[in-house]
Length: 442
Ligand SMILES: Cc1ncc(COP(=O)(O)O)c(C=O)c1O
Image 1: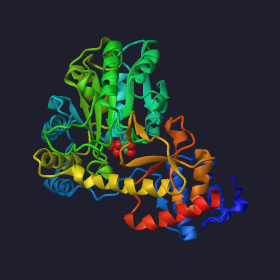
Image 2: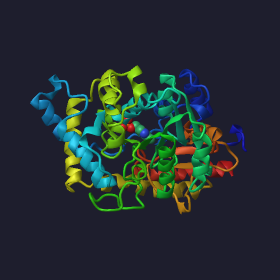
Image 3: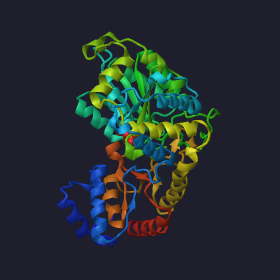
């Protein structure tokens, strides 16, 4: 590998080093998403260069207008003065239940459809409740790679977790891997995102059925994070009530909790509203051990009147009206939200080619036997360099991303690239910078 003295990147080493030290950032190669963001903000203003910003998963599309209008109308009606019910406003609960039926073909009562302060709160609330169902099991298993903040949640809760990188356990191989961990009897919940952040793996029905079977066998609650709902663009998941549907473990077990985020699907990240959907079976089950923490041993009651009450006593009243209005239009077939977010997949296709044309390769490149879909994220590596060195160098070329090492991935040669904030008018810059990077490092 060439040393820094042998290359002439557009942003000098002195500039990057000065900013890194000033911000007390240790190694750029292992910096968190927010640290990279801060570093890049300052390089952009000091070096006068517009970055190809691929570090953070912020929606790159305006918020769904139906929601904004409904929210303004709700505020004007005076909802800001009134505490919302913790379990959510009735129209929203009905629309969430309809949405799950229309786009997943799963039946769930509106009673178990709860608004949360972003799906991150849904995850936090679930860890608190699900990992306390039994006296002797309370460990979460992450099917990684994954979203680092979930692990941060467990760290602040002081709850144990384990994880493995699914890359080598796709398809039927997942069964024996899960058996080897779950048979020890200490796992209470399994969490994965589907499509997966960061790798954009989409679990197949075979894999979801294995996870469901294991959940039944070992009495485990599956926490299915659908932050990128319907974004496997290889299938048309956009038509309410018409197959194909968003794939889900809910087809194979009754022990599930779904986190459906509004942040990416409806570009509603700023209002921090998500959906926590609990299966009827789990909602109505009693777990005697819950009585140690809650007034009731019923799962649904403990979740609403114990956990969610304690966390934030409900979700922003006006945002609930926004989400109800968006979902109603979506459910009625008047608003094709998938068409709007398809832009991410289209950009990914172009950007991936720019990388692979310039010596990079895709790290997570397959869904079992199919090429990985184009979506919100993709993963890249450059021969002869690990991910940490790659990100340290790419920032000198006006390109930012995050190292896969912080996502629980074993593929530490790789980076996660997020397409959302990159504008199409930046593609020529991206191409030119990648060409220069490749020339400098070949
Ligand atoms: C996998 C995953 N889960 C959850 C979230 C957070 O969702 P929300 O904004 O609804 O809290 C994200 C956001 O990037 C994500 O990538």
